[in-house]
Image 1 (cartoon, rainbow, N blue to C red):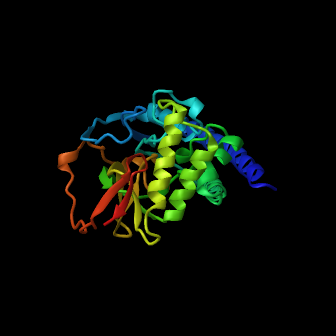
Image 2 (cartoon, rainbow, N blue to C red):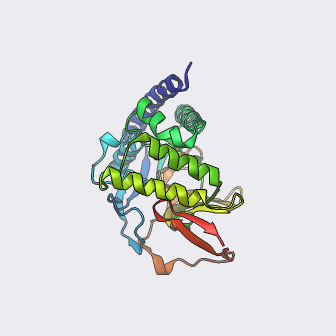
Image 3 (cartoon, rainbow, N blue to C red):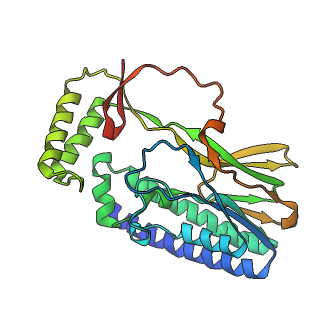
Amino acid sequence: MTNKQDLINTFNELESQINQFSLLLLEQSKQVPFTAHVFQLPSVIKGEENNEIEQIAVETVVSHDAVKETIKLINLLFLQNKSEEISNKAAIRLPGAICIQTNLQAYRDFNSLISKINELKMHIKAIVTQVNEPHRFEFIRSSLHGLLTLNTYRTLTSLVDIDTINFGWANKKVINKVTKETVLDRLQASLESGRSPLHLPKEHWLLQLENEIRLIDSLPHNAVLKIQRPVKVQPIARVWDKEQQKQTQFACATPLFVFALEKTVAEIKVGELPDYHANSIVIRNRPKAKAVELLIPRLNLYIER
C-alpha cells in the first residue's frame, strides 16, 4: 500500500470513528446528567496571524449548545468547511470540559472510541511527517485537498472521576533549530514548485526566493539557525485529583472529556476561563536567550551571533 492510500484509508476510518463518537456524545447528553462548559475565542483573521496579542475576550457557552460546538470542532477537518476569512495557519481552539455521568458500559464505549480516534490521528501524523518537509504540502494536497492538519492531529483527552478543573493562559515561544541544508531544501522546493503567494507577482516572488537562497548559501556550514516564532498564548486546564493528590496541566485547545463513574457530575467542579490580558501573565525563571539576528522575516528564521 502506498503512503497516499494509507493516508486516505486511515482518514476515512478516522471520520467514521469521529462520527460514531459524536452520535454517542449527542445521545448520552440527552439521556444522562451532564455539565458542559466551553469557551469560544475570537477567530484569527487571515493576515493577522503574527500580530501581537494584547487581550482575548472569552465567550462562555454551556449545556447542549456547548456539546454542539464541541461536536462541530472535532468534525472540522477541512478548510472548505470553515469561513474563508479565518486564517488557515492559526489553530481553531475551543477550551472547556464536557462532564458526563456514565455507567461502566457507556464509559467503555466512550473510551474505546477515544482510543481509536487518537490512534488514527497519530498514525495520520506519522504518515505525513515521514514525507520530507519540502514535499509535505503537495503530498497532503494531492491526497486530501484542504486537510486541516492542526485539527486532524489534535488528540482527545479523557479523564475519570477527577475533582476540579480550572482554566488559565500560558505563553509559549516555539523555537526549533534547523540546518543550513534544510533551509536551502525548503527554499529550493518553493522555487521549483512554481507557486507564488496571491499578493505577490510571480516574478517578484521568484526573485525573493533566489535572493534568500543566495543569503543562506553564503552562511558558514556550522551556522546555528533557528526558526523562532512569536510568543503564542494558549489556554490550559489544571486538573486536580484529590485521591491521587495530584495536579496535572493540559493544553486545552479542545474540550476535555470527563466521565463521572463513582462521582456525580455535580461533584466535579469546573471553573471559568478568564479573559486574557498580556500584562497579567507573569513569566518566571526565563533563561537568558542567546543573541540572534533575523535573517528571513517571513520564515521567522534567525541566526545566532
